[in-house]
Image (tube, rainbow, N blue to C red):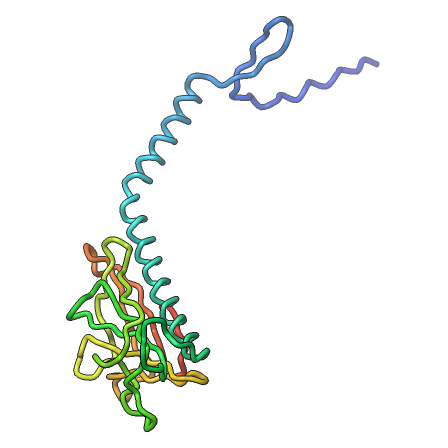
Length: 207
């Protein structure tokens, strides 16, 4: 009986070319494959370059927002430690952050509450308080756009932390609101925003 050898299974074609040199098998890419790779890289590079400005601005907005949050927490920690601020002659009854965007929408103040009295009055920023630091927003093109939940729509806010807890007083917060919202935005594109919320319990978050 004659048996036929089964036909070999045809292997799929491999795109890479095969060459022989000095009896050794070499593989390489064809010209078409190389052109295709170069084309894909060119397209991806064009997309990245086209969006680079937007990406950079978004990162700047994010960094400025996180810096603002860090400064709020710094004032909170200074109040908890009852630390005496350098350069302030009167003892601090608390610490806080003051923002007035009608005067300057690219900076805010970290202050020592030296004007507060034992009755609990003046637990917010006044001209009699000691300025620990005026903090400029270093990220180019980022501004403080608006402050939400404020009485009469006034675009200023004083967030005051008083030891030992620390207790928090948000001056000019609407009576029916639990938190103030400070909105940072891109100066060239105000629709791109980041919101910092601070509530009466002292919780700070980015929305």
